[in-house]
Length: 523
Length: 75
Image 1: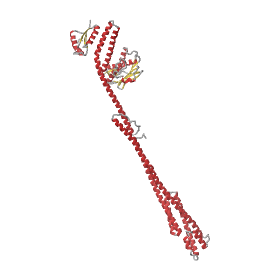
Image 2 (image 1 turned 135 degrees about the vertical axis):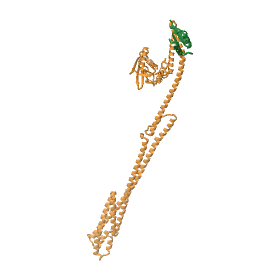
Image 3 (image 1 turned 90 degrees about the vertical axis):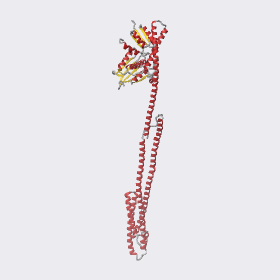
Image 4 (image 1 turned 90 degrees about the horizontal axis):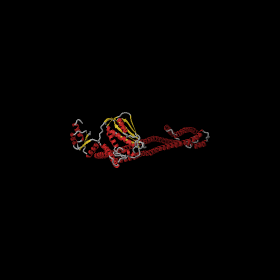
């Protein structure tokens, strides 16, 4: 679920809860409908049972007292039963109802037959009465009252008293009555049994419906609770905890202690918040670093400025006495040429002279470096200027065995101070020549990028060790035995004053590339 | 014929060695310590070349040159 946003999670949980409630409601509704049907069925079966019992009561009364009213009652109840069954069958159409209907039909049929037999016997009995009433009147009321209750006993009595043959219609009728009554009783019994079974069945169905409702509640409600609690748990664990961590981190940030949060990445709203926070922290860290770097730079440049002031003062103070030493040494060495002086004196004077020249150069560099210069911008042709410098160096033999190669597509003009720019390239070329140790290829590539001129000075020299790269433009940084460490610092200053850029890249033992970018127009 | 050179330089040692070097080359050299003295000298005698320090007490080299250019059009 990690890829779900918080909103989606809440929506999903709500959806699941809604579905659960809907299922619960629908199942309850269906159950109620079912239950209503079952209760009606129960009502029906109850009526069925009571009507059946009524029929049996009237049937029994009829057989006991032979009251004709009872026959009407039985017929009335049979009609009732048929009506109820008709209605019930239309709605429920169950096997049990069909069974009851069959039995009721059978019962009805049999009852009709008994009724026929009853009247037939009555007719025969009346005939016997007409024949034998005068001689034997005692038995007639007894038989008339009991022939439905004990047909076989009465048949035997008739046979004996009136010497009737078994084939006599009355006897046959009594025998048939006995058979039919026995069967009718059995049918009645079965109707009662079946209606009781229907009753029981309906009861069971109602109970089943109630149980189903209970079960649905018991299953769905805990599920509902589980979903709700699960959502709550997810939100509190994922959101609240992370927000707490975020809050403490924010407090830390407020105190100036920047650190990004390393929480497992989640693509929900809080995850996005944490990501944004981390981005902000990264920005702050970068800005803090940048600020530190700027501070360091400012400190460095202030340090350099004070060094510069000191160096400038020292250089100015040294310049005059140094000049005097130089002149004196020159005078002396002039004298040496004419007279024959001991070797040691001549060498010493020579040393004084050469060392004076060396110090003069250092002082000159220092003065150059500390000079407040504002470039006098003129439109100059960079390509021909560089070509001139290369030519001069070649003429003077400063390139030794080094071949030079100037690559430029066209004559390029730029706004620059010619004298200062010359110094830049003389310094760079001198460095390159020194790095190559008198043998190699010095390439100068000039092209344009948008509004800038780009000049690459490429040598095939010994290169600069990577750890020295950041310091090459620092004043007084040198790896040369006789360097002042000011050459590239001067170059850097001049380019900066032209609002340009200088970069260096180098591979040890393969060579170094200085890339200068200068704006073509006055800025 | 010897060329006459006038040097104006406040630094004694510098003046001395410049004078020596130039005299060795065969020039007639006169050295003075400041611009005003040089100006006075120029009035009394014609020189072929004037070498002057820029920074000097009183009359500096650049001012001296301006004065000379104003006064002596022939130079």
